[in-house]
Image (cartoon, rainbow, N blue to C red; front, side):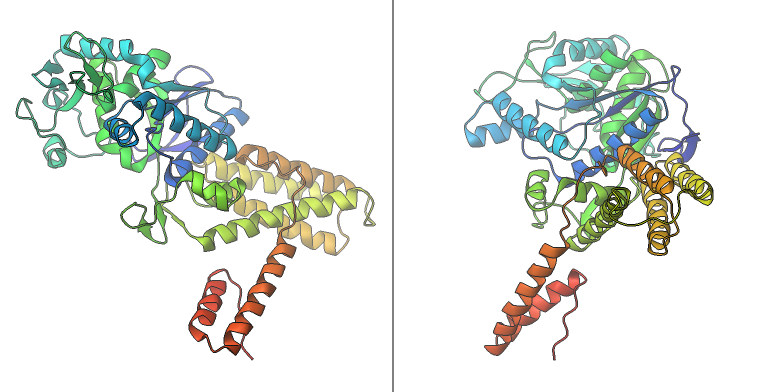
Length: 464
């Protein structure tokens, strides 16, 4: 029985899809004007594992992400680079999809581009106007927040509190918080993206893209809507208002799920602080499985802190798993004598290990607890191997179980993994030699800096 935390109710609830065992899952995708960053990767890895685990439990998962390929950021970047907005969007969409493939995010059934759903967007805006929730001005079409009584129910704030955010200043709007459904634009520049509509040429607002897409493929109600914590307001609040106002059906979504923030060494990631890391850059320096393991070592709802130290610990954790698989393979191939042929005691031990792993995953997809149960099993198996207290049959079962866990979490633990410890030792020895030469030349500052950096990686050098 799977329980998940619903942002709307602030409680863990038993998961039950609207339609039998079919799960309709939508997660907000990227705006493709640049390389996606590691905060995006954290969210998409988390929901990839959620989709994997739902499938493992027999659910049929229909997973859609949108691709925001029309946006002011795209227009501005295209103009700066002297290219067309659509060419720019396609380039970074391809980069994003390539990043996801490398990270093992492979359970999205369909990536829906906003530019390919303009008729559906226009139709939903027309419905909102007819139902009295939207109005036209000289600048565009806006959603009237005051007409939707439940506005703010996801963030648990009232309309007066939310009105402090006012991003768009437009005297033609009825209320300062009314958000754009359609932006009127004339084709004055080659970099504009415009379409015909009943209200003038122009382009959609941001929020209406997602509800038009989900209504097209899922209908007015579906099971799970996911995204980062920063999207709750105003984006997800606006989605709820649009869809429930247009359809008259509540709730739009049965379960709202949000991933926590990703910080870099305790600070919010931003370009102004110089700690902004793209997935593209990350994958040039670290293996994708190390980053995936790093993500899953923290619960998806909790904040996560990115640093070299945490990635190093993730690397070490993965090495422990691969090392045990390597040892088991060598023992099964007959390179190590095994005294026991069978041991019934391991049946109970493995049943307990499975129970702990799946209890953790059933409890709001608690991957760090699931990994903890895996490492406890590894510790026990390593002890039993050292004491020749495990049989061939049990070794096979342990290996099969670890591979099964890997499939759920998105790792292929059955592949040959190169042991990196030898390379690490060579690099450490090289740094020791360099440092000794620096000390001989009395270049203390650089010598101490190397020593400090090694300490950050849990490598201690003692000067004698």
